Image (cartoon, rainbow, N blue to C red; front, side, top):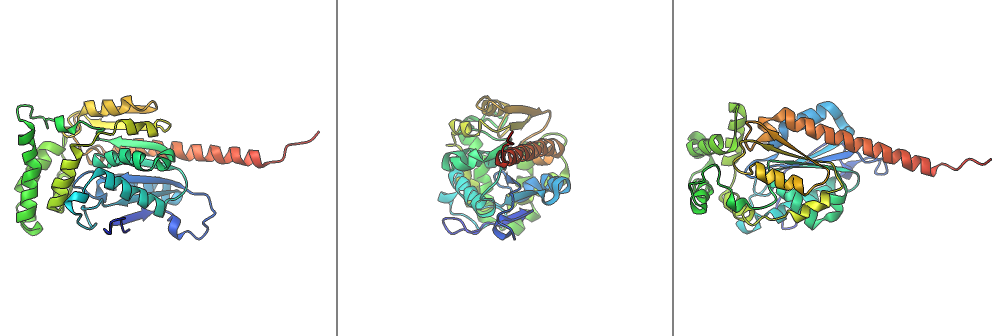
Length: 318
């Protein structure tokens, strides 16, 4: 998909694609929209995609993509690396591949922040949400996060993305893959809790190495300004799950509690021992709640169809 400012996004559509359906008048399936975290790509959700396909087949539509500046999508200029632009890209993606029907919206980290920005940018899409899953994310106040290092000031904490940006600027991806010492240390220390599966950590290291310097710094700077708690009200009508790891250093538990407090139909779940990468670290937990939301959305859709059918029947005469 091409974005409003000319970038090419790598998109995957599982299930019936609204843009290619033989019968556009047929009922729309529930669409699951999976927005990944900063410096990752669509494989952030690969465990959940596999389980959804196994469970529902083509009875649901699944949209995954690489955010601008991530994965196989085009590199993005630093000034365009903003949460607001992620929301705009997401809205265009939904318009293209799922213009009708109920949505189950899931966002991990910056993907969850993009869902909040989506509610600001396109309240009509937020109104279509039949379920919302917010995983290891924040509604604001990231400038005060200590990364578990309260003795360091904000400038010292900012050195971590600066170092990653410098490595991305001065070393080739091949060189960083050959000696990913810094990237591996950051991933193991700050992103994962216990237990840490080497396969999952290796995936995240490779995703990190694949990011451009603009992605590293541009989104980091913009997230420090992210403040969208008020936007959560647009999802107050939808069943919502807020998931966080007890050892999440990037978007810690108080951030999840704040999100849940703004959503009257929310359920807060804290995963003991887990870090920031819940879709990988606690794949069963995340999948369980995502499947529950899809089942509820399908049940609501069926009930609505039944009511519409009854309303269309002529009344019996005596």
